[in-house]
Structures are given as C-alpha cells and as structure tokens.
Image 1: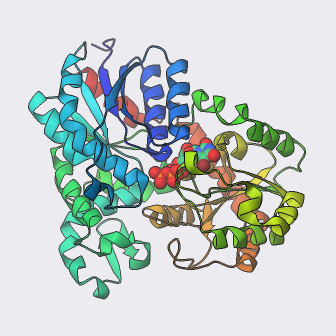
Image 2 (image 1 turned 180 degrees about the vertical axis):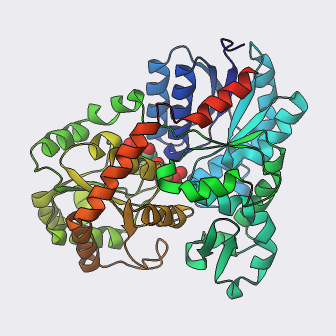
Length: 461
Ligand code: BUP
C-alpha cells in the first residue's frame, strides 16, 4: 500500500506566521506523493497572506484550493479585541459549521485533515461526526506546546495568579511567571478560557504536528514523546519543515526588496544586522525611534523591516513621518529601512548578514536556525518569550534583557545598541549558530524527518 496517495485537507488560520508553516507542510506533503486540498478563509486579512497563497498555488497547480467564505462577526464580538488576527480566528471558528459541505464534497474522500491550533475546538466538532481523522498543527515551539498541553492541569492554581512565580512542567522544568503569556495569568479572560478548553480537547485528536528541530529542543521533544508532560495526549509528529522556493518569488520582486538585495551585495561579510518583529507586530512610534537610535549607535549596518501598523494594507505612513526627518537622515546613512515585505529567509542567508534582532515568532526562530544566524531575542507578545528561552537555551542567541512585554517598557536606544554590538562581536555565538545550522541540515530533508514519514505512513495505512 506504499504507493497510495493519501488525501489531506489543510486548514490554516490567519496571519503569515500561521499560513507560512502550513504552506511549507503542504509543499513537503506534495513531495511525498500526497494529495493536498488547501482550505483558504476569505476575506484574507493582509496582502502578505494573499501573496503567499497565490505564489504557493501557482507553484503547485496540483493543489486543490477550496475557498471558505467566512461570516462577519456581530458588532459586540467584533469590539471584543483590537487584534485583527484574533478577530479573524474567531470569525473562522464561528463559520466552521459551514465547512462540512465542503469536506463531504471532496473526492477522493479525505484520509486526514490538519487544523490550525487556533481553530481546534471548533473543527473537531465538524470532523468527529464525519469520521475524518483530525490532526492539530501547533505552529509554535515544542516548549510552548508543553505549556499548552499542561495548562489544563495547572490553570486552576493560576486563579491566585499573584502567588505563582513559575509553572513547573514535568519533564521540562520551570517556566517563570515573566515568560507566561500575560493573559494566561488571568484565568477568566477569554484567551485563558479558550486555551484551557483547547488544551483539554487535544485528547480528541488523532495526532499533533509540530515544526521544530532537535538541535533547538531535544530535551523538550523527548519529554513530550515519552508522555511525561501530560497524560493521554495523541502521538506527536515533529515534521522539521524548511523554507520553500515559492516564498522566494515574493520579496525580491518588489522595488524596496530589490534595493535591499543590491545594498546587501555591497556590504562586508557578516557585518549586517537584520531587524524584524514579524508580520503582525507594530512597535510604538517612541519605541521605533529608540530602536533607530540603537541601530545607529551599534555602529553596524542594518536592514530594518519596519511595521507601523499590524495590518500591512493600513500601513500607509511614509518612513520620514514615522522616524522624523533628523533620525531618517542618520538611519539612511547607516542602513536600509523598508516597510514592504522582504524575503526574510533570502536576507538571512545573505553572506553579509551576521545577526538577527527578532521578536522570536516561531517561524523566525526556525529560519534563523536553518541559516545559522545568531539571534538577539526581543520577545514582545504571547509565545515569544518562551520561544526566546528556546533560543537562549540552544545557544542560537540570547535574550536582550528584562525588556518586558510590548508597550510596558520603553527600551532605550543606548541599551539596544550595546546588546546588538554584543551579538555581532560574539565569535562563540556565531560558531554555535553555524553548528546548529550544520546539524539541522544533516538530518532535515534527509533521513531525519521521521515525523513527516510516520505521519504519511499512518495516513496511507
Ligand atoms: Br515582516 C516579514 N518577510 O517582511 P513569525 C515576515 N516574513 O518573509 P509572526 C517575511 O513571515 P506569529 C517579511 O520569514 C516568517 O516566515 C518570516 O512568522 C516571514 O512571526 C513569517 O516569525 C513570520 O512566526 O507570526 O508574523 O509574528 O505571531 O504567528 O508567530
């Protein structure tokens, strides 16, 4: 039965940080002779997501796209959060009852469905009666997954959150209070309530897919696979995904991206700092200016992907307006700042790039490991502090400092500049990052991607 092509439907949620790993998974499944149906939720929030999906579909015409038209939220729910991505997840969740007709129309029938972590409690109610095996794709680190899967055990004790200084996770160790996403410390918050019920519901799924490397999280993966963290969980498949060619068509096509590419070619080897806080984090104007000052003070040339608004389509302000004329002048002398999408992996793997100031969105961490570039971790939201701990623990980089959650602390330019210099001048760190890259490349995409193979084997059976 080894030749049968299993048919898998993939259901990503919103945000480039969720779409990207799903599309990478799709590309890997296609290379292993699977049939893939991609369910895309419309309307799409950002231009970056639309571009990623179109580029993917034109690179892989054999994929069936099913457009899923989601219902708008009622005004009260729409006012419940300021985060456009969180609201989109909520709209998708509330529309999922409309998905059954799409799923039952698919031919051949599905062997499995893979659901984004943000949608799981709603998607399982659809696939259970249809007897479609459902797999959770957890799009963050294994360490964050350990907190997630353990959360239903510990959430009660968090009620008295002021007394909790850390959460001790069996087989993993302690996660300090300062690293726990702040909303999880408010058990009655909508986020914490959902996190808990999703954590409970994991047991209804057929498997959990995670995208990490042993070189980053071997101890955590071992503990999870041995069932030490929480009982009764379905099997864990670590798929170790890597960037794919369809992503390259994006950045360097644009004018700004073209300029970045030319500028990088003219810089000295390993001399450039790359700065990005991912696709959905906008710093305050004040923090942006401190960062500008820090970059200039570091003395190193830089490529800075600047976000002034969470949603790219709304980010219309010119750079001068954000930075102010004086800083714009200083910044232009030393580096290059873009407000449009660049191909991050392409920039990171450029020989001129020697360090990455990152918010530690999980995809960014995986990409830094893949190219072997040291990371100065500056986590700002949600899972990013825990991911930053993974960066520090593996030796891929270090945390900037006790810089607090986004908006709570203004990190001064002076300190930012000092920490960037530290990253750029640490030879040991550079060597370790290079080792991680070499070790990862020996296994991933070669004989080591066992998780993916086991998964497909299961679907073929
Ligand atoms: Br911005 C930007 N180019 O200009 P993360 C991002 N990316 O290729 P996030 C670009 O988007 P979540 C750009 O390489 C990565 O694959 C980047 O995902 C790419 O962070 C992805 O790093 C961003 O996980 O998502 O966007 O904050 O919060 O869901 O982790």
